[in-house]
Length: 141
Ligand SMILES: [Zn+2]
Ligand SMILES: [Zn+2]
Ligand SMILES: [Zn+2]
Image (cartoon, rainbow, N blue to C red; front, side, top):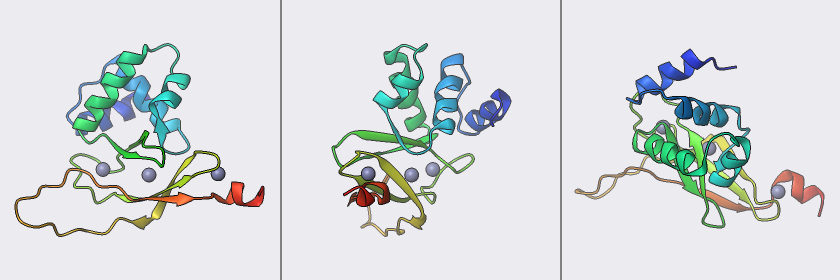
């Protein structure tokens, strides 16, 4: 379990000042079992108004405290950056989107490849999403 001071340290490492809402959103992300959508965060943070949640997420994204990827529906999914301090995207991994239950899964053991881009291109994020059936849905079919 993360204490508020753990979270404050994480945020400070990303250059983010801790506020009550930022701590709440960060905590919700640590407690999520996988990547979450804005709607899922809104459901778990009923005490925080929706525009504040979105503003906090946008700030977290700008500071690489969270990473986002589009799931199979084109909906953004958010997850915490696992790197302390500045992130150079080495924590990137594959994601799996289940077309039956609309759940996104982290496939942490499969890292995204290091790309060598042509000169002049500066990557900021990359995502690999595989779509199909998750083990749970495969069994119920
Ligand atoms: Zn990262
Ligand atoms: Zn599924
Ligand atoms: Zn992930």
